Image 1 (tube, rainbow, N blue to C red):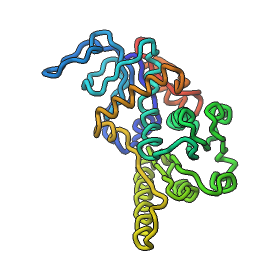
Image 2: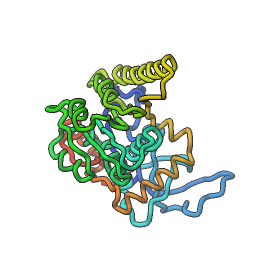
Image 3: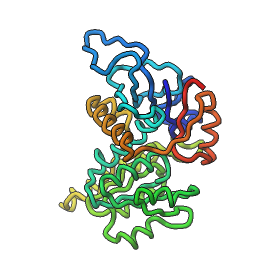
Image 4: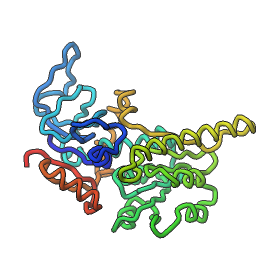
Length: 315
């Protein structure tokens, strides 16, 4: 391992609040970049790029990235474009694959569509902003972190300070016809409010609900239940009233999507690494040695870091 990305899910898992990682002991980390030391392909011909010294990136379906050495199946590895810094590459997989899932798989958005990004200054929010700008979307983003307004403006995202403004009121004024998509990882009352600002045919996508400290598992389950119930109610209204399909909801679970379609995962990560290498969606990163993972988590909890945190091996 050369570099491992740090995400909100790592902090949630460490505190016992992440639904997909409830057992200890475990090693955090869903994404990494590394160098191949050795490999075995059994009866499968090795691809031309696979050799000792080859640099690769991977999104993991189970945590384990905070380690000096990792053994992974061949299908999870994607070669880095020549010259791409592995520290930058390690910041791409989870956040940007999630953003791609939100925009394409669930949002089905087209140029000119309008979206609301909840928590737009977080890792996934920044990735949605960068990819959305490249796709010609109109975007609003809720945030409150220092410097968020300027950071969001770089991707053309209109800033809504959720501590001082009601995003529903803001959008009702600026987008009276509604928005095509809302991306929400907060859960709770924001789900209902987000659903109300959708345009006909729009979609509310919930992912990695963060919830309240100490209650994140319950809040995650509650958010999933609310999204499912909203979908059932919408479907019932359409059926009973013989209406056209209206607003919908969806749950994005990227580790499951990766496991379900290996080829699609590899193609998507290959595209995202190329975009990062070209500078189109390269994330801003903050690096620290692997041995300082605890301090990095503490800084993230205090919102004292700028950009995506990346742990590096060998120092």
